[in-house]
Length: 318
Image: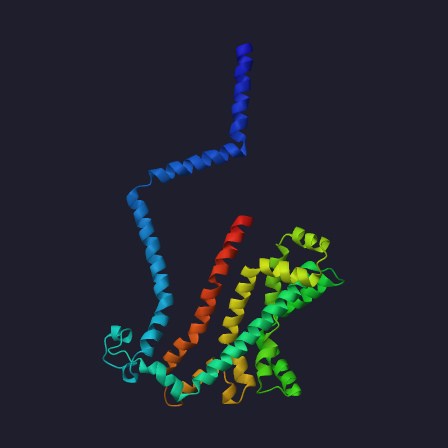
């Protein structure tokens, strides 16, 4: 009788162990390991080859326009879109004409366009990052009546397309007498709801204990924002800086609308000088476009280490 009771108890314990979630997870993991071991080396090699081939096709499709732009900028005008030429001649010029990069500065006031773009982009980037950081700190850390409602109303402006607000902003600038000035190029772009939203979400992840300790030591909100919040937010600030600079540097529509004098043109508008009614000088246009890309590459390379730091911090928090 005792042996029968012991056997029943053992059966019940086995059933409970089999029904436990941890047992199922261990069993599933063991099955996955066995399945991985049973795979043949040939099958794993074929899967890696297919993955590598797919990634290679994606890389080629993204790099092909850039390579064609480099090749065209170093070609002679007669070689572009010439008939009865092998297809590979479109990608490899017969002679490398480095003079195209020098000629760009003589054909149009390219230096003036470059300086205008640098000045406008830096002002917009600095203003947008500064206003977004201050507004995000207020919405994330300060408490005042109607804070959340005001933030949601501010966030609702992201749902309005830029083409809808373009005409009212133009009329407002014309009322101020700012058309065809640097004010019209810079001031409308230094405020953004997207930057405020992104920095606010990042500020909310920062530990509040640091801020409380600073308040006990007598720090004001301004010192907390400058000495604690901003140093801890370098990855988010670098990301916003990169996106803002790229957007302002490549912006074509707004400078084309508010600027009439060619001495105030930015690079995207100035590139239209290489396009005429009866033809386009593709070699000079591509050479100018290559030189236009350089500042974006510099900004990205400078901020890349902050991106890596942000990924590391995310992995530690997760």
